[in-house]
Length: 208
Image (tube, rainbow, N blue to C red; front, side, top):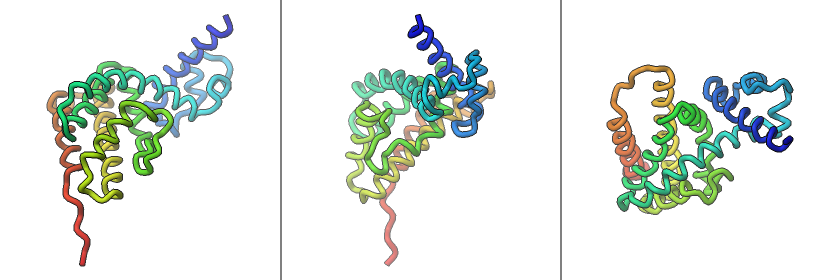
């Protein structure tokens, strides 16, 4: 019974964490607000069940990653060859999180963590190591061999940050009940074209 209770409590804290981290920010959120929203009386519930704020964030992102990985695997199987096809698969998988309020909150959270992916150093964050997402990054880099390696890696990181920020912005509009400037189909297609253009831009010329 205690194990079941612990599992239920962990899930309540994860769901509360999604809501509070999305509203207050990963680093600005008050753990006591998460504990209260989860209906826990122990003020140290996050530390007890997860060990730290960072571990709770990782748990939130692990559930989000599991959902999008399923979609991404299917999208990659049917994606056209080349960079645009890879980016189309990525955008479609990320957009699947726009379908639910929970997913929208997670998009708001993950955009704050894009700098932790490890793309620039080729050292994936443990949450994405061995995933279809990390495989996609490698395949995208293979399409950009004409660029110098430092430029290539930096652009890939920037492109992923752009996708995350755009999704978070759209998610925020949905959560707030505001009407975006463009319909979702146009938004997603434009995001694919924008990131493709960013990655395919010629390398900068060095001044003589």
